[in-house]
Image (cartoon, rainbow, N blue to C red; front, side, top):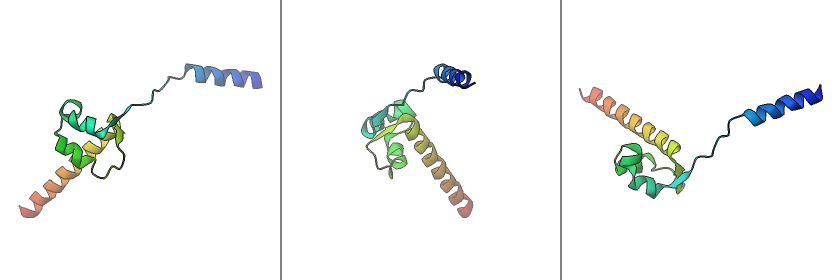
Length: 85
């Protein structure tokens, strides 16, 4: 029984997809290529990563912070329009 269980665990591990660790890039490199990589100006990257303390970040994490920053900025502007309108 134990051999059968060990065999199934080993087979599961061997058949599991290998997940590669995502590369972290220097923030300055991503900022310089912000239009090409994220489709935004470098100023947007600056705002999104303003409170980020590291010097490297993955594209996925940077994109998530940029999306959050843009969403919050849009919500703030929408609220201002409602308050003034």
